[in-house]
Length: 40
Length: 226
Length: 234
Image (cartoon, rainbow over all chains, first blue to last red; front, side, top):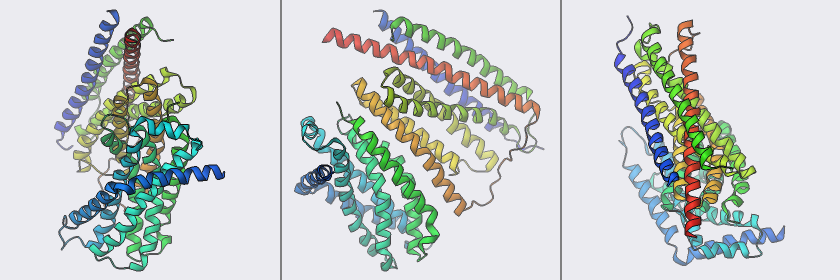
């Protein structure tokens, strides 16, 4: 009977997704701002 | 060659003389050392942790912070743009600037250490005063490269925003290998063990010294504006 | 030479790569969570492995590239090299956050402890601190050429430091062996698990590439704008 540690798995997968998405969004926003400024 | 050596000594002497005028950094570093030694002494459960056991760690933490206090001071002088320019325009050879600053910093830190060591021996009632010279040598060996890195990083952070904080943050990771090695060697020496037992750690310090002395002196010119 | 058009194009390429990588990440998630067998001894928590190990690879890739480019910059003095190093360092920070969080989350159920000062973990922690220091230094220096030079110096020093961190902890460990910690053995992975792991490696590498490309484009656009503003003012 494997140990009941699914909560840790969920936590890790959630944190990873959060960091990845957080950084992707941060980059996208900064790029959008910079491109806007380049056009003006 | 003699020009180079003279340049080194001149720059070191200049820095130390400026420091000696006010002595603020030196005195505050010493006071800080005493405070740290005291706090660490009282931070343990004396029935569980002997003063002997905690002394090496306390020593090295103290020296680390004292070193960093000294580093920032060393370049405080050059924070005025013209002081550094003056150095660059002087006939002192470029390479001598790094070694001169390094020597000045080293003597400052060595001063703290040479006073701090016997004080620590006293406060912690450490046995083996006969081992004090050997411990002093090890401490100095470990300090040498750390001061080189500090000189290099200090040159870069002297005139930046939040320079002190940046200096500490950048420098601390470089303290890890010499400090850990230093603590291990000091602990063994205080127990009266022979040097041969700590050969591995000594080799680590030696390698660290060689690599970072070379690297710091090679990279220092990149920190100077053309 | 860098132009706004080229930077924009790079940004778009980077975005495409990142989108593909994100889709791949979803695929890895589904595959790892649903279609990969559960490890009998370690349970579900073992699946963190499929994120943690590729994140480690990507983190050290980011670090290695930033370090190598620092050396290269000091030699070639091309500011574009500096911008790629900056991009790699920032992406590296994000990746090392993943590494340093999934690690303890994995460690607690498997090893019984959140943190252990072993050589790998300690080196990773210091790597993270060096990355952060590198980026903070960049933030504090205003002149772009000086910033590039200073960053390169710290980059080279940091690169040289990591092996010493590793050696220090290793030496400590061999002289002070740990009490037996329950460590997951590294057996040969059964086929299904290996495929998931390899897929994840691919996804993380692609993600790194896409993010660095975008971040580089961002850096280039910013530099170009600051140059324009300086010329207009001067």
